[in-house]
Image 1 (cartoon, each protein chain N blue to C red):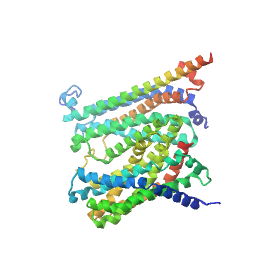
Image 2: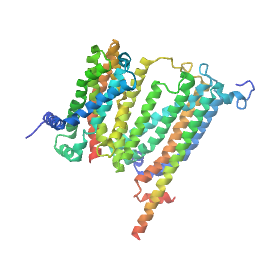
Image 3: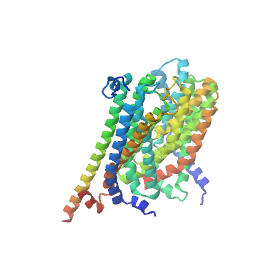
Image 4: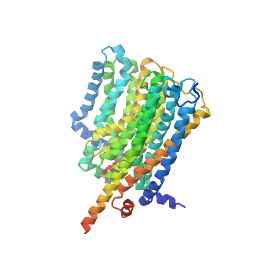
Length: 244
Length: 64
Length: 226
């Protein structure tokens, strides 16, 4: 029953699975993002408070969500690798990091651009933007630490530990900033009109979210193939794998 | 829906209710990030394949 | 001579303190840095005490953070370089005991020293005397937490060539909640509002970090030293 789990630890299996899954993930992602863009940009009605500017949510919210999701994946994969010594965990963690960091940057930029019409400023110490900024620093720390070691295996393990420490801190950071921000709240932060979104606004958002997640899966699988090859260069199965 | 009936071609769509210079750069940057991810991942994989192929060639050279 | 865990900790703390006091200039450098950095802010911003008072908690805390970072690099480095750390790891007491002792000793000479010097700096920044006790309490809790966060960072970067830059990159984001609540507690004490909430959160952060960080730092040392 656990064979599928053990297979996940086997590099050739991970490589072939990633190679097979990537195009599927990409295709489904294209559908999800395509529908989300069209429905969100064209057919969703403008928000009664924010007008058409609210449509930025269709890239801002999914990228923010994915930045956290990717960090969690990175930290959990690293933890699995540390605890059970499954090297493929390090490969997943290393592959996730740059993708997650790029999503964090996207969330920050889109959040900043959204803030300009809403709050009148390109930057505000809004709790979510501030937490995202700190998350970007956490990503930078993990990626820098991994590459600072000459021995890549040691770098992997150090980065995995830092990832876990960072993960534990993410809720602390978020709630600290939220608490601090609620004390400093000057101008009211414009939220999205009503407490719940109507379907015509919500479905494109969910589709974009799903699309982004599938896209992350596709890019992860591609990067993962590279990571596996880099770590397993000496192995015999690599010969057949790269000739195919 | 715009008064013209077809929302895509009418002016209202591209101006995004006046917020065009915030909305469109956001989506453009999003496209950029997604494209970068794909390109960077593929380049990484290609470089890894190249390194692995080179190692195999070197090993074959050493053995022979 | 058999020593228990407590005995070993006391021995290591005494050793660390001995070594630190043998190089008084290295001991004083972070403190002097603290004083210098705090001087930079009035010079760069404003000379009026009434205006400085508003920014004082933040300035104090940023300076404390930065000067603590300076001294963190030496937490494990010299012992790792000459092999003492490996000997200590093998001595049978368990690496965690050693790590706790070293970090505590480090806090005594850096963080605790900072807390003692803080009234001087606080006066220079216009913080009223009435807020001193809260300020020192929050600095005490904060520097202790920071010593532990720094221990994890130092353990991860020991042996790396440009480790101290990376150390700062790693530790500072983790220390941001500390900054928020530490400065917040002092700020509240200055304006007369009850600092209890911020202090409780700071204390919770401290307890949380002091309980979990030793294990993280030990694992980190095992990763980087083996």
